[in-house]
Length: 69
Image (cartoon, rainbow, N blue to C red; front, top):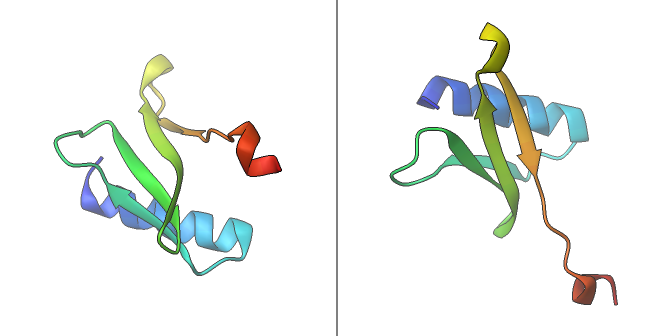
């Protein structure tokens, strides 16, 4: 993921969820994904999917059972 792609994804998620505190940040030493934060809290990872000759993105977010209590 290049810087321009990260910026587009950042703007898209902010608009989609109506939350200006969302941040998409490049991962060190990885070019196929970026980290997603709300404020300072890490919430998940965006992965690039280049299958079928069309670029798309998959968002993966884990929710711990202890977070629900």
